[in-house]
Structure formats: structure tokens, C-alpha cells
Image (cartoon, rainbow, N blue to C red):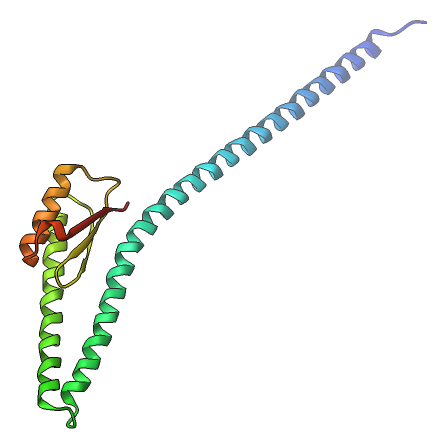
Length: 174
């Protein structure tokens, strides 16, 4: 059996074309897998970034939501007091008491704003003040607070509210 040189050339060319096709196909699969891995890595990075943003937003939302809720409740209280004040059937003593409460609410709004801003001026990102008659509770945006920071915050609150620093509760919340 004799094989011609032209026949061998055709087989060699065919084998080379086949080899190139296999290598090309393998390369395409490898590139596709690499793209899939890159895409998966990007999705994981996006999820991590999204989670970080979500956590930051949750922390911000706590402070914003509390202040908005505090304002809403205060507005409702002031509206109720205005109705008492403006009601012609309200007695003089009750009207005067309602007027004192409206003034007290306004003074508390100012105190809260001043104290929260002074705490932020001490280097904290945000703070929320809960005022009682003879006590205050402060939530400060921080992972933790050391003794010096606690003293500074208690001092700001006690001086501006005219209460003893023992009556100031401070909580760190990131």
C-alpha cells in the first residue's frame, strides 16, 4: 500500500487544523471560565460593598429616624397644646399651663440641638439626646467610648441641662 506525499500533506494539514481548532476551543472555554470567575468575584465585591453601605445607612437611618420621630411627636404635642390655648372654653389656669408647656418644648428643642451639636463638635459623627426632667440619655455614633470620651459627653450634657453628670446615661451605637 502506498501513500502519496500529497495524501500525507493533506492529513498533516488536517491534523494541524484540528489541533488549532482544539487549542482555540480550549482557549475559549478557559477565557469563558475566567470571565465567569471575574464576574462572580465582581458580584461578591458588589454584595460586600452593598452590605457595607446598608450597614452605614442603617446607622445613619437610626439617628435620622429618631430625630424625625421625635419632631413628629413634639409637633403633635404642640398642636394639642395650641388647641387647648385657642379653645375659648379652656379655663385661664389650663391655658397658662399649656402656654408654659409650649415654651418648655421650645426650650428643650434648643437645648437638644445645642447639646447634640456640641457632642458632634467633640469629634463624634452624630448623637441623639433623650431628655427627661432630671436625667438625660445620649446615644453617640461610635463603636465604643473610652472613659475620657464619656466624661466629656457627660460634662456637655450636665452643664447644658443643669443636671448632675450621674444622671446622664451614654450609649455608643455605630
